[in-house]
Picture 1 (tube, rainbow, N blue to C red):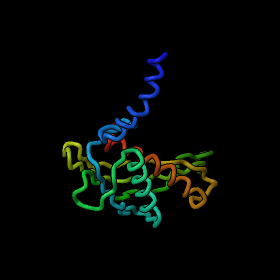
Picture 2 (cartoon, rainbow, N blue to C red):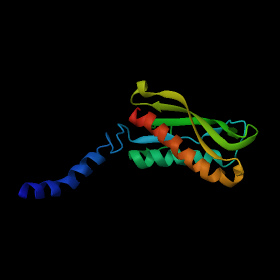
Picture 3 (cartoon, one colour):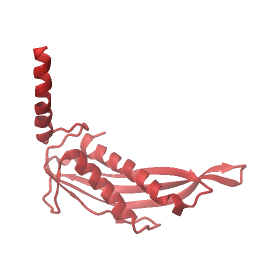
Picture 4 (tube, rainbow, N blue to C red):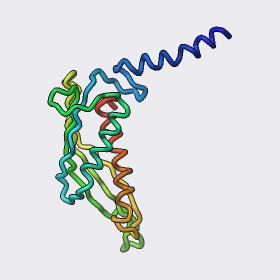
Length: 168
């Protein structure tokens, strides 16, 4: 009984010690640095939505900062540097009903990311991440766009985080 009590009392100290060391996080991420520069995404998609770049940049920034404990830095000397551009913002028909009528549409967003790890150049990458969400053809894009961008943005931010820090 005394061992259990001692273990329960020691657990918070162990958690704080490992969380504060900056090497590992509870997300499975391996983080050795302390600073990151996350640049605003350029919007190079054929269909430009003015609010898309800040919204996706914010999603990526929030996901990385909340899960890593890294401090944002606006310098060329940050331990990690993320830049990129939105390369695709497209709506297409994915479902056809009675061979003539569209039943479902798909919003697809692609982002090309350039990740620099100044502490381990082998971890650098340039990769395109693509995600999509479907919506009913009887809905307008404008009526569902905010929700879809939110959903796709979360997925893209997770993919980028995992590639950069969890190495999935």
